[in-house]
Length: 325
Image (cartoon, rainbow, N blue to C red; front, top):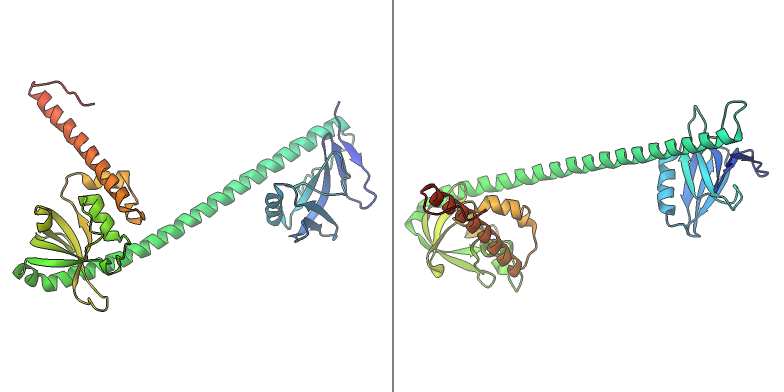
């Protein structure tokens, strides 16, 4: 029958028990923990007693980080069953100041002591895992709050930029109407040099048009869109109609010239699908091939939806059964 056997440690007055394949030693309040370049992790208690852990154990870093969290709290440490309890430690556990792990009522049998120690170790480990999960949750919530704050700042910045673009477009709109045939610069085109710009990705993904070798896009003004968008036709592309988001350039050499900063197609339902299939598309550092594939995927989904609508309408008139699920 397995029992808990109390050990005599000639080098200290620490209480230690052997419980089968390991030894557990009551270390007192953890005062400090450090690791060095010689391969050791050392823990120290309030009486300046120390015990070390060799860094050969795969989990040494986790134990070291646990020890940092437990500084100022009572602990016990584990040693393997084949070594002296004073040789080294391989793990630590938080002890209870009210019911120390290795303190028992008078008359407790060695068999009962074993069960009590194992139960207390399990409880300590559960508490550690729970606290660690709580810390992770708190850290994650803090990260979410920081991300929300950054997003709000970014949204405020983007809002301010859009408002300025609307104001600029209001001031110049009479000139746009008087001169509907014009070339609009593509934002970032001066930096092309083989590099794909954000506006190139939007043209390719939403219109399947490659603008990577272009500096400007010829357009014919159709009308004013919402905010800083302008409805245009693209003469080079069979007068394809779309909306371009425009901004007045602030760059030296092109200052006050109008540039296309984004583009929208005119396909009903496109943007719901784009948000669903590629929710972070504006942050993707894609090549044109990937943008073209995304365009084809969204078009395919749009066609599926339209086919379903068509089949349902025809079925209502009794011409055919619904053939698309």
